[in-house]
Structure formats: structure tokens, C-alpha cells
Length: 138
Picture 1 (cartoon, rainbow, N blue to C red):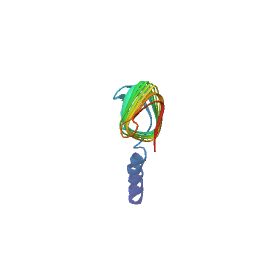
Picture 2: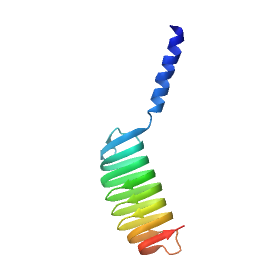
Picture 3: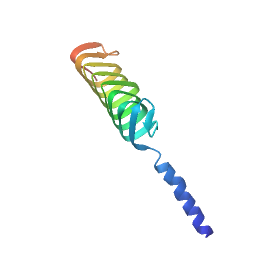
Picture 4: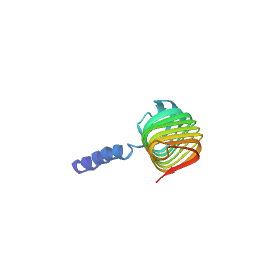
């Protein structure tokens, strides 16, 4: 019996660690979500949300706010405080750093390695910061 206690205890401890990341998050507004985790590896879906780290797809109706996105962020209005690796798609997109693409009517970023497609495009660190229709920095 004693030989069985340690392996069973190890299974419970490591099972909790393996399910630490959230595969699906449903957000009503900002931090009102099920579950209310700060990291999603998979799909984050809602009306409006703030999820600090998304590795996968963040789909929101009105607004999406994040710190780090690896994958795609899509909403009517998108905000990112640190880094997007992938795509940001919406009417208004704002990010600190984008490695990939911003697609929308208004796209703004401090720094970028990629392409912006929209009516108004702004890359703060670019030699030509404001462009109409397409802007890029590599």
C-alpha cells in the first residue's frame, strides 16, 4: 500500500501542472470570464476582454486587449501592450510591437517587422511613419 501512495500523489501533482493553461476562455467583458485565467493556449472568445497572454486565437466582438499574442487577435477595436507575433485584425488596431500583419481601417504601432494594410497606417519608428493603404517595415 505504501508503494502505491507516492505514484498516486505524483499523478495528482503533475496533473494539476499539465492543465495549468486554459484551452478555451469565454469572456463577457474585460475580466468577467469563464475561466478568468490570464493565459490562454487555444481560443479566447467574447464580447470584450483583457487577457494578458494568448497563444492561439483571440476573437472578440467589440474589443480585445492583451499584452502578448502569438497567433491572431481580432475584434472591432484591438489593443496590445507589448507584442503581437502573427496578425491583428479589426477596424482599429494598436500595438507596441508587431511581427506579422495589422489589417484594419486604422493601424498603429510603435515598432514593426511586417505589413500594415488599411486606410491609415502608422509605424512610429519608421523613416516614413504615416502611409495610406499599405505600410511596411522590415
